[in-house]
Every structure is written in C-alpha cells, then in structure tokens.
Length: 345
Image 1 (cartoon, rainbow, N blue to C red):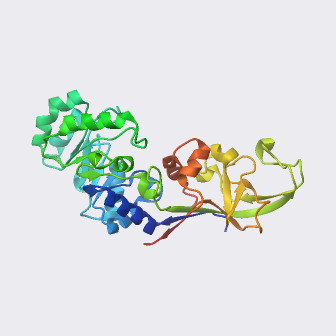
Image 2 (image 1 turned 180 degrees about the vertical axis):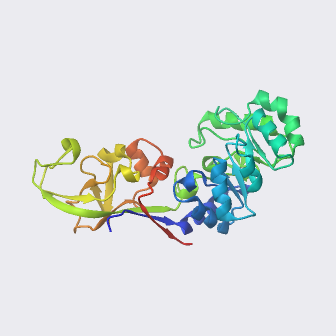
Image 3 (image 1 turned 90 degrees about the horizontal axis):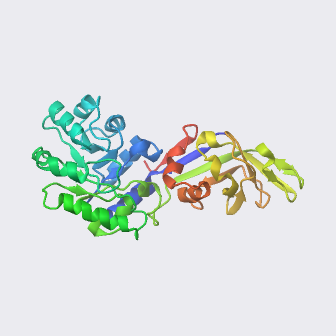
C-alpha cells in the first residue's frame, strides 16, 4: 500500500487530558475545534468524554452540530464564535452554548432564544474576540441578569511564562469579573502551566491534549509513517527532485516516499527535515513535492520499507521548528489522503 498512515493513540490523548486535569484547580474541559486539531473530532471527543471531560469547545456552530451527533445529549458544547446570524436553529435544536462576544450577539440570543444557556467572552487585551472593558461595563448588569453559564477570556502570550502580558491580562480579567456569581475561565494549555492564579473555575486545554507545547510532558498522540516506493543508487554529483536542490556528495541511496505537501507535509520544512528509519535519522533530499519526498537513506543499516516522520523521535513541534511555524499548523494541515488508524478506542 502506497498510502501514508497516521496513527492516533487515543490512550495517549486521554493520558494527556488526565495529566492536565490533575494540574487544574477546577473543572477541565477540552478544545476540539478544527476537527479535533485535525485528528477527527468525533473520535477524539468520545475518547475524552470517556476520560471524564464533560464540556467541549469548538470554533463554529457547525462544528458543534457535528460534535453533538457524535457525543449525543449530555456533554456541554460551547461555541467560541458566539451566536452568529443563521445559528439560532442549530443552537436551539442541538443545545449548543454560544460564547457571546458583543452586544449584537447578546440581543440576537436573548430575543431569539430567551432563557437558553450562553456564556460571555471578554477581551482582556488580545484584541480578537470578546467584549472590551467599556462594552462589558455598559452591558454587565443586563448580561448577568440573563444568567450566563460561563465568563471567559483568552491569554495571548501564555506559551511564554515570563511574558508581562500574562499578568496584565490576569489583572484585567479580575477587574472585569471579580465579585460575579458566574463560573470563570481564562487558561488554555499554556495558562494551566502558569499556575493556580490563572485557573479559576474551568480550564480549556487544546494543543496539549494532542501532544504539543507548552505541555512538555505530553505523551505523543500521533505517529506518521510513510511507505517507500522506490530506492535508487546515486553517484556523486547526481541530483534529486525539482530544481536540483540536492546534489549527492558521496555514493548515496535515495528513497522516494509516498507523501508530500498534498498530504499536509509542509513544503517549507524540506531543507531541515528528516525521517527516521528505526533509530537512524535520514535527511530529506531535495524539495518536498506534492505527492513524493526524496530521503537520503544511505546511513540506514538496511533498506527501509517505510519511514517515520512523526512519532516518539520527532514531535509536532520538531516539525514546526523546521517549517518556522507552530505545532497547531502541523496537526491541522495533515490531509484527508492519509490513512487514519485509531488505537485505544
């Protein structure tokens, strides 16, 4: 089979959730937006529900609808984008909880679905989603009278524990919410590691569940193995791939493997990337193309039939470093053409 195989370890996923739950002072939710960070939201969410998660966060109401179908009634599904035009029927029929971001959404929600649950998102300095302090001050008493189930904000720099923005946002969140009788949430994965002051009533881990930084103790969740289609012998001076970007400096063995940027393996990581043949690191030879990658397997003790790109040796953040990006993009880029295998269901 020429199809690359992505193995998703649901036991590892649950282990990461339990570890982050143990570090959290209050309840621990799970963020499963972007199709469970590219790993399949229905399978991921069901696994996390079995671990004990009872509240889930998605980006859009449409994601919430798919998640409700997977989870059934019971778990709470919160929607970061709030109550957008056209969302009313989904929110009502599927018991979704929009995180209200502004006065227009508040009016839309209470007029269309009076008494239906909702949360409130506040902007404490990230300038992305949520009510700014002045808008919240004007709306606060009215909003609280409608009995929101959660008030939340989002940290901009939690991956850097020493960043002064963290303390500024914590202070702003406290100034906006101290004294209210509503559960509060500020911390995602990075915020959990900032300590109990940031935890409040609910934490919302995302990337740490899937094996990403800043959760340095995370168990790897994904393994990506790519089959070798062909191996050829090169003499010194021969080249590989588009643009002749690799030139053999010694007698070399080059394996052509069956994956590329059409599968979400980012082209920009090519010059620094490597794959593993057992315990032997084998560098990419030439450019990553749409369907194929050349890999220098000269130093492998035997010719491999497949090579590992992600796994115990190389994390999503290792690949992210090669591509000058973040682990989130590595995960969510992994393409539908990859064969997906789930373990631990």
